[in-house]
Length: 608
Image 1 (cartoon, rainbow, N blue to C red):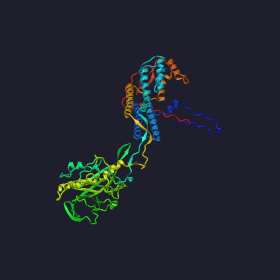
Image 2: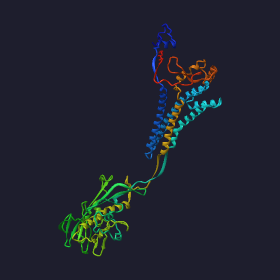
Image 3: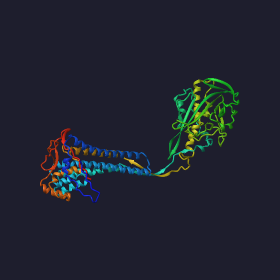
Image 4: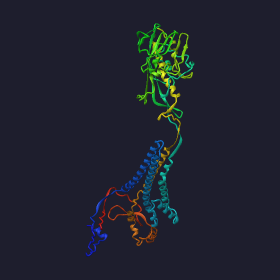
């Protein structure tokens, strides 16, 4: 049992000297006999391999986190001050951890290299002391300097020199990551994204020379409604013709454009114009008949008060005394269900227009509409909608066109919203109706009317004053900026990270190969002291000496060189290792998972 020393608290109590035992007596007293211990041939190898893998894994994790940090911050674009501080902190921290892992790994490799160096050559105690302390860079330098100063170079010197180079460059290799990325400061002027200010558009303020109108238009003839020629005529630059068209409906769509630094970018707002036109047969007696799927209904009177005919956008007739019988004052209050009528001498086209708006890739309706459907489809009529009311007329061989119109400014090579309306009545559409010709003309007229608002919007989108899209401000000038971004050369990152990991693996394999068939020991001070006990006991009185003085004294006391080797065990156990002279320099393989009887460490007494 452990002995407890108890001191009396009474000053007058007799002091009994405590019972004293030597360490040997205590060990013998507490010895409980031998116990079997498993000792396998792979224990040393797997123990060393586990230590190396743990250090390798630490370096791998720190490098992986550093790469993730570079990836995250490089994709964030401009970095503010706090983001820059966070990146600097993380990069320094992770590179420091990687350097610690590399240093620990190289130090572990150096401690393993000591034993084959001690085993394969006889050394003086001065060299033994230098080899045992070679793991840190200063220890390696001390060994190399000691050899160069005294005995010159040897195989041990070159091996330690190679290890020193690997040690230094291994610890500093993480610094190469600093060459893989850079903080870039970019200065310039940031221009806002501009949008058209639709609230200030006056749609009726247009004027143009009538000579800008297309003089000769496409004659549909008897072509099919979906023929390539007709579709080519219906297509207009910058507008999208929704296909398939028909049977008498045409839809155009236009995606509004924003502007940034002089370049056009598409917005998420799209305008759709859909028009369906049907034929009305007109007589000179003021009567008309409706045609719907070849069903003729009527007659109806022009003077009849009905909402079926609300506005005459353009009127043409062979009779120069033909009067536009629609009250123009009603155009200012037309709603979205307005019907637009194109009236000729013997027929008319009644069109049902619809103007819609969509946002977010045409998946939803906007919260607030930008355009008024009726105003845009009634655009050619100048009364009540415009500031100017110019009488416009075109005289042909067998017809005359008159009315109050406003024309969009165009060039002679680009389409105008009114192109074609003046020639509708000039086409050879006679009674009785031909079904194929009727279908073709209905589709063609629908296309002419459907483009009325779209072309007006297209023109205003480019010609009207603009404001900033996000703030709706009239301040459209650019703003100076300073942007700091992280630029990463990923090729360099990959090469650096892979090189560090491959270098560690090669170093581990090289040291394991060099330490093959040698019993390696850990770098514990107690394990080293136990190994040195054989030679240390040959000399006494050196506890206050320096290491160099003690090594010189031991060399004098021993008189011979020593090495690290093995000797047979006295109790049939595994081979014993020692540091002395006359040892076996061959390390026999240990038995595989054989149980040896080894003395268990006795419990040390507790002293109080």
